[in-house]
Image (cartoon, rainbow, N blue to C red; front, side, top):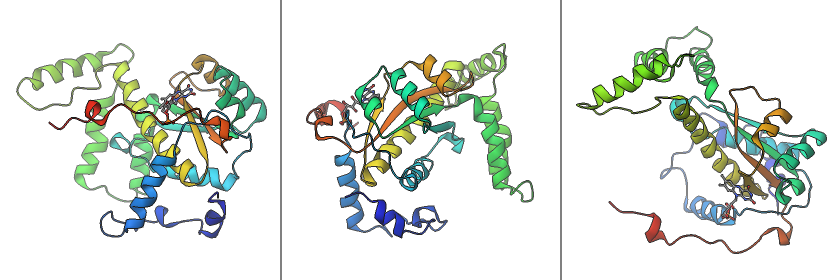
Length: 267
Ligand SMILES: Cc1cc2nc3c(=O)[nH]c(=O)nc-3n(C[C@H](O)[C@H](O)[C@H](O)COP(=O)(O)O)c2cc1C
């Protein structure tokens, strides 16, 4: 059973989106843990869907969950393209190398990293937090957003800022605990893709919680995808996401994982 009906019964601003958030260990009962574990177990990569799009309200609810994902300095260097235009959707599915998951998906999303937007988003955040300049920021927050972040993130066409940081990190790092990146454009890209990957996981778990399936896809032609979505130079597609109702044959096999002992290290 899909959760579309439950969603319709919920008010537009469900509990997750109010300021009074539940506190883990205090407001969440055992049923929440059971449900969460069921959702984690239920999420599988599905390669064949029935092609039916999700109700708009359901997708909007899923995307609202997705934007609650954490991000470094809360700079949210991500964009989510819900490809609704049928021609674009078909072209995007082809750019996903024609993968069956993309071709049969009810909905197709592009998860886009925007390393280039760190400063734009920083200014937007300051504007939100100060209610358009009307309120003062607490001093540490003010210093963090107005001085520290620009010092850590600023770049220039000749890489002078990056060189400066590289020297600063190595010299100060000899005697002090230091952050070590970003030192170059590659670090900025990794930084942004990291945030998008976290959002991708929230997205997939939310899709499952709403009663639908997904398939994350790293196999796509990024040059073509950027053209289809009309993305600017600084944007990069982290991954594509197929969403929809599974067909039984769309689950290709059992879920296989490496032994825990190989990947979990108690140090
Ligand atoms: C970043 C990323 C890229 C992926 N790319 C593809 C892809 O292009 N095509 C595909 O069919 N599955 C893709 N997958 C799905 C994985 O193959 C799948 O997660 C893995 O086999 C484990 O299966 P499970 O998701 O059902 O647990 C991708 C998964 C991730 C996280």
